[in-house]
Length: 250
Image (cartoon, rainbow, N blue to C red; front, side):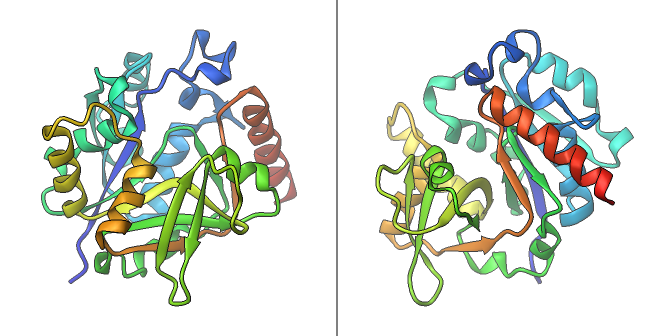
């Protein structure tokens, strides 16, 4: 039987690149066509993937997020909150903090500053994610700068992921990697071992690339629909414009 999924939303970052908007509000809380991006992720996890329990990892202005969503009852989910007090350890630390809530489940990780619209996330429910250590969401794009701002993904002829490169200088193909992963409990165990061994900081994308080298099973999930990384003022405005236009077209 395929294991169920728990959601994890890392939302500890300060959003420096989205200044001045983030002086008074976490960037995941900015409304995009009347709905904050974190709320959009909660609804997406609930309605498209069938997730009923979500861990939100807080940091900068975390109290405003907790006050807004509470227990999650109003959104039809159960929410847990953890605080990342060690941002210098990399966002892999935010992922690891959710380990006590796994209960042998796989985790669906979605960064709080990644905007999705009209995607095929519902296909996660039929995807054989339990056969892999890591599933990374990917999308074919025509804009190489998008890949340079995120990370590149290389696959072999059988579709297995063989390389991830954060902020690549050279673009190997048109495959964009996104901050949306499904992780097996084994990944959390391995990540915990790394920190306990004394590694001061771990970038999660680079760490998945290390796992590939070590022989872990990593595959890609081809995402359809709209995606924007909300990493600056321009991208926030683009997401707002896109969401409004999509709504008016329906």
